Length: 221
Image 1 (cartoon, one colour):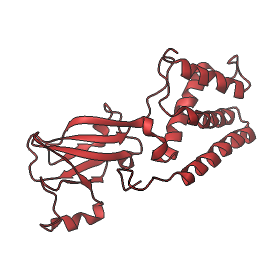
Image 2: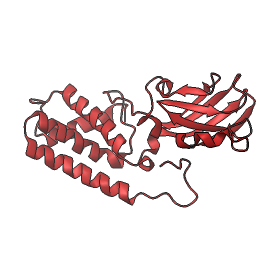
Image 3: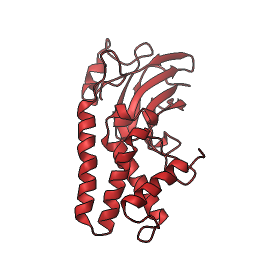
């Protein structure tokens, strides 16, 4: 299957749902835009456990300026899905020679780190998330880099780029896109049916998801 074939299949399926296979009411570009919006919306609504296909790491990110990393610089400048909530883990390469996992702390606990026993250091690296930034707390910042693990914003689908999300979730993306298109066509009852169908299943999926004991890296999820 060539790149973009899945996207085209989704556009065709959306056309059938809208009773517009010949693109009379909705142009191919309009359908593609609706699918891209629904893909992003779906990813924002689903539990992280369903989004493993979106997991990504940026390696050797400069952290030499007081350990600050702007989220907007990650993912080739496209940012992180859901901002700070999309950060999974941070691994610090202190001075380019000491690789250690950093422990996330809540900003409300920052005062506790002023205690010499709990302070962030080269042997006990910490980090917190605030104002669209990661701030790493260590002792030596010179030549320090970080490997940042996060959920990426899904790339835009095109006729040559397919969606990254799990195939089992694509029908939900179609439901949301269908709802948006019906709204544009002023068919609000049909829009509500498609939207409610998606939301009900998303709710069930999120409620069912549990992380097996001992698995998982981000205690904020």
